[in-house]
Length: 76
Image (spheres, rainbow, N blue to C red):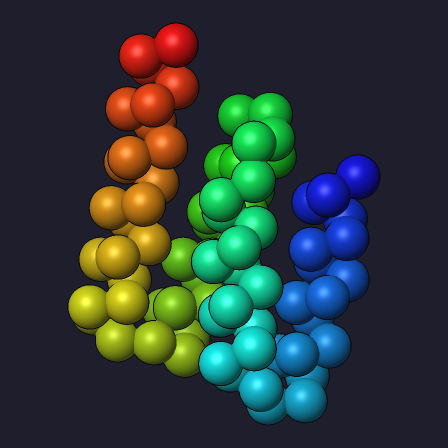
């Protein structure tokens, strides 16, 4: 399962303090074509990460990416 794999890659990056690598993993993960439930989980994880490690700007970027995902899903 891609969600499980993503979290297994992401968590050690956070533990090691490699914020840039963790952000890159979450960014790529939210580009995957997974079920809506799994994507909701990934976007929530990404937003929580940015609330702890990012800025208002990075949080807004995650929210916008989630909105874009919803727009694409609604169009299908």
